[in-house]
Image (cartoon, helix red, strand yellow):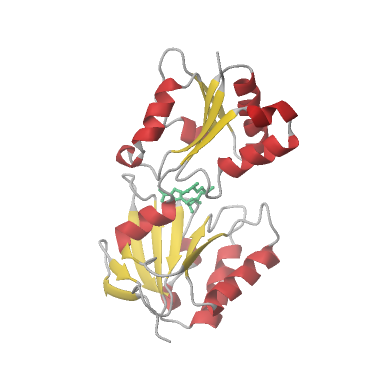
Length: 250
Ligand SMILES: C[S@@+](CC[C@H](N)C(=O)[O-])C[C@H]1O[C@@H](n2cnc3c(N)ncnc32)[C@H](O)[C@@H]1O
């Protein structure tokens, strides 16, 4: 049997937002590897072994997937959203680079998914309609000083911004500091969209001006979008319409 690894994005939560390519690849797999809540989204069936593991063991999980594929298994590594956005695709390539030379000859594919910021932006209108950037606010894998530097430069460049991993129980103060820094750099009126659990039954969208944004409005199931100076709010409430025009003045 020829083994392979597919690193697949399951989208933000709704079944309708899983791509047909990912569904078809899961149907061919012998093994699925991933973080517990993501593996739980894959239906069990005869011939399929589910390997769920805890957070923060991404490299172990990646090595396990590569070892199984080298042994002839057909392995899908699952991430939420898109696997290339703060997720397992880079972890698999890190393991590949440091691993057995023969792993580089394996059939390895990355299957895109709908990332949280795009699902959230679609729900809110088109807040990322002009230039934007995405920043992971977790300092697990990078120094906090680098996050602050990137935030300042993104604000100075007038990007709209998407923040992943905004606030966890282990790091409650970081996001408060982010809001403070943004108020200093962008003023009080900038629209902020808190998009929680997008495309799931617990979905909740809140749009507030920066001055009313509070750290407790975000948790680890929230992606936060911050407008540029040109972003407009046409309607707020539960079904907001927020957009950033396609052009910027000279
Ligand atoms: C480790 S990152 C994984 C991102 C994922 N690979 C993606 O492309 O969406 C986890 C973060 O993604 C965001 N996220 C994932 N799913 C979400 C959803 N359904 N609604 C809102 N934010 C979500 C949150 O910011 C969460 O803390």
